[in-house]
Image 1 (cartoon, rainbow, N blue to C red):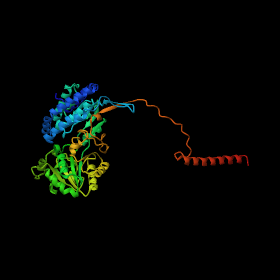
Image 2: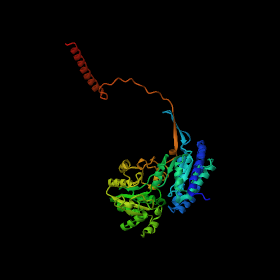
Image 3: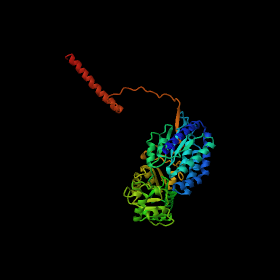
Image 4: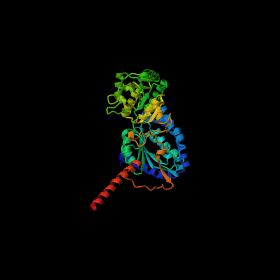
Length: 495
């Protein structure tokens, strides 16, 4: 008798968690040296298989492009490794001699890793490495559209870890993918934490699971170009950031906001970089195929090249086009392309000055990217300061491609494929997630002495008033009481 597929999926999730729990109990006793050896082997495997995994991801999902996915796999292996290598994640990780404190790292336990279809292999490499660096086992739930390449990435990471001495089952991945299996994984009693990367409904489900969860929010990232910017470089970086892996990174630019006085010059530079500006009729046609009727992006165009989108929309564009640019006059349902578009389409806005630009960026963030990121091309420190102090984002990316800057590839931010958006977006973390987010910290505190207890004088009626005022009031009160007592005594004596 053939077993029900959904039941098989649920059982597989339970089996993977059981094996991961057993592996994690062994892994938690590893030394820092043993852990770092495992991470190094995983790094080596990720680098060696970066190209093959990139080809598998593009072939299976139809999203992004081969060269950029190679870079992302390499970034998740080598760049991440270089960043996390010196981190202390075992035993006493900090001693504060002045405060007489020890801080001791403990793993959180088995982690559920939710993997998106947009970055199906690089996210596996990244999450596997930060999980094991902090001595946690991890079980992955792939997107249904990326099962094969996600499982292959998990298999490569698992084999490398085992070869370095990690316990069997320390990295698992569901092969019979279903929503039931994902929910079972997230809610399983032996799962301690969820690392959720994917669409908003899935991230919300992670937060509703009853487990601690580290998730992301949508990234409707504006790129503001101020008059002090290096315009040729700004145009180069905007197009580079938007077209990196065909716009599949959530930190990629979604709209350009530029001051009117430099708008025409910026447009010329953008065109030289391969941006094709749409006329009003073309904007409507592209809107109809890029955005769904319910307001979200059409899955068919996610991670696609401009030529594919143009053919779908029935418009003609130059062969060398790298991205489509839609001039817009507002934000909201009337302008569908003002929302997040994980593909090679940009919105474009002209503003009178940086004050209006600041407001337009705020509108774009409120439409679906609050808490995430904002890019600025600007050399005026005062304007940058105003944006930094007033905009509800956790990453303000200056003079850099937003997609690369947000993940820490071209900035000093922590290398990461899980970009926290803070409480503005309902996220529990506001920074790029690292192994240090996957540990519990015990603290040992020594006695430093009992605080001196001073004898306090009873307060008068004045209480919190200044002392001279209190003394004066108390004297007045005492005089009245004394007079009343004397009067009563005289009355009693009939004097």
